[in-house]
Image (cartoon, rainbow, N blue to C red; front, side, top):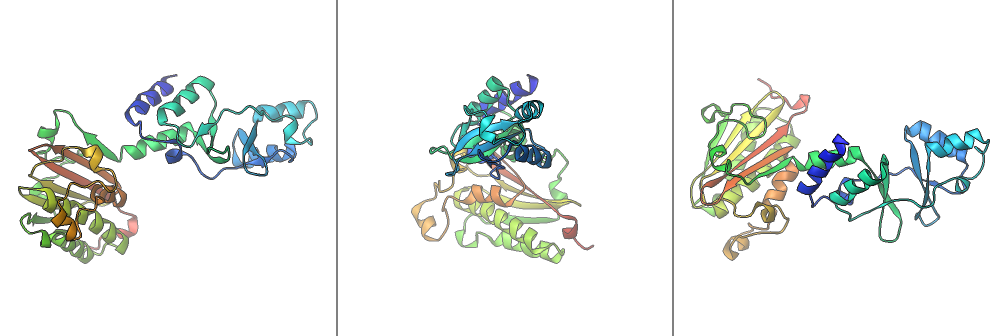
Length: 315
C-alpha cells in the first residue's frame, strides 16, 4: 500500500508519461491452441507468473496465470489447450493511457503486470511496477526547479545533481562565451572537445560532450543578453559540464523542452540556429541534465557524462 501511494504521488507529477513510454516491448505470448504444459515451461524459463494469449492477428485473446497452471496440474489437464483454462476477460492498458491511469489499475486490480494493447486490440507490450519505477527514474534525469530556491541555487559552488563541491577556480577547463557574435557559437564546445581528446577520452564520449555542450553554448549565444561561461570538471567516473548564462533566463522550461519549440528570431534561424532541438539534444546526449533558470536572473545548465572504465584519461 505504501509503494502504491508513492506511485500515485509521482503519477500526478509526471502526467505526460504514457504507457508506450515505459512498457517492455518484448512480449512473451502464446496462442490458445498451445498446450498448457507449454505455458508451464515458458513461465519456468522466463521466471514470470502470467503470459498473454493472442489470436492469429496478434490480438489479445486472454491470459494464463500460474494459478491456472496449478489448477490444471491438480485436475490432470496439463496437456489440454490453453483456451480451455485461460482467462478471457483481460484487464489491459492502452498505449496512450497516462501514468495516473496506469497506477490506478495497479491499485484497483492488484495484478503484478498488465498487457498493453493498441486501438485494434493487438498486444504491444507489458507493464510491471518495475517498468513504472524505471520510467519515473528516467524522468528524474531532467529536473525542473521552479520554486523560490532557484535564485540562490544559481550561484552555488556545489553540483546541482550530486551535491559535491565544484569550485569554479578548480575547473579543468573554462571558456568565456562570446554572446555578441553568433558566428562564434560552438567555439567553446570545439575547444572542450579538443581538450578532452588530448586527455585520451574515447570518441563516443567526445561526441556526446561535444554535441550537448554545443547546444548549450548556442542557446547562450542566441538568447543571452549578458555573459556566459563553460566549465568542465573531470572525475574518475564522470565528466561534469556546467554552462552558466547570466542573461535573461528561460521563461517557460516546459515549452523549451519540446522538440521544435524555439523563440529564436528569424535572422538566427537563417544562420542555421534555433531549430528548437537544443535542450532535447542536451538531454539526449548527457546521462544527467539539470536546468535552473530564473527570468531576468539567468540560467545554469549542468550535465553529467558517465565514463566506462576504458575512457578514463591517461595521466
